[in-house]
Every structure is written in structure tokens, then in C-alpha cells.
Length: 205
Image (cartoon, rainbow, N blue to C red):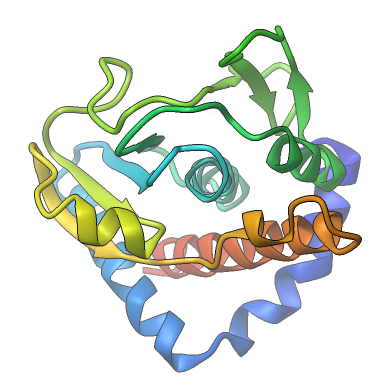
């Protein structure tokens, strides 16, 4: 891991055992899906879905892949999408950079960011797209709904073998306010803790 990212991870690891029971119950479904896939010797594909694929779903995609690498769990593949496409929000990009991810920004209306958690690793390509984009899996994956709007407005995710509800409050509510950066950092940290909690339970199974 990049040094700053490792420091971020070290700062929240003690919090894994202090998650509210309501959240751990939701995360157990994610753990079960991953364990079942690994027992069957197939990739555990996770497609994190929110409305615009601009904030929460990208955070979950990145932190889940980072957690898998941290715990040495192979065969985890993470993706993200929305019910519509906009752009990976620059405020969320700034939050992951503050956490220690290294980001290459090609610019443009919907830039395809290259995001790495460690040197000499393949980057994750992060840009806003619909959940059924050709870059995303179309069968044998878990649809992890990271916002209630997407969960309610997308009753069927074709090809998904599991559908999990894991909603997060949208940091967009703080855009343009003095609390903006702190709210994005808070949401990124929450997502990171929960993805590390889930993958830590997989690694102990």
C-alpha cells in the first residue's frame, strides 16, 4: 500500500469491532456471497450500485478491492454503476486522494480516472456508467445497492445472483458548505471500515 493509505487503514482498523449491529447484519450477506463464490472456486464479483455512480458506489468499489488486497484474498472483483451516468464527482475523488490513493485524472466531462492503492498494481478505472455497462459483469455477481433511491427505482438487476442493500447517506448534502470535505471524509471512512470488516471476516473463514 502507499504509505499515506496504509496510515489511513491503520487509523480505522481498531474500529472494525465497534460497528452497529444493524450494519453488521447487512454486511453478513456480503460475506456470505463472497464465501460461497470462493468455495465454488469462482470469482466473487461485486457491483456497487447507486443512482449516479458518482460518489458512494465508487467509494465502495475502491475500498472493497483495497480490503481484499490487504487481507490477501484473491478472486475478488469489484465494479460500480448507476441507474444513470454522470461523472465521478471531484469531491469524492479528492477524498480518496486525501486517504492516500494515487489518482491519474485525464480530465474531460466524464473522465476515466486511474486509481491505485499500491505501486506496480493494475489501476482501477473509475468513471460514471450505468450498472449494465459493458465493463461491468452481466452474470454471476452481487448487486450491492449503496443508496436507497437506486434500491427503490431499480427493482430488478438483470444477471445478479444476489441483491444486497447497503445504503449510505449521500455526502452531496454538504456540497458547497464549510463541512464539505469533512462530510466526504466521513463517508469514505465509513465505507472503508465496513468493507474491511466484511473482508476481514472472509479472511478468517
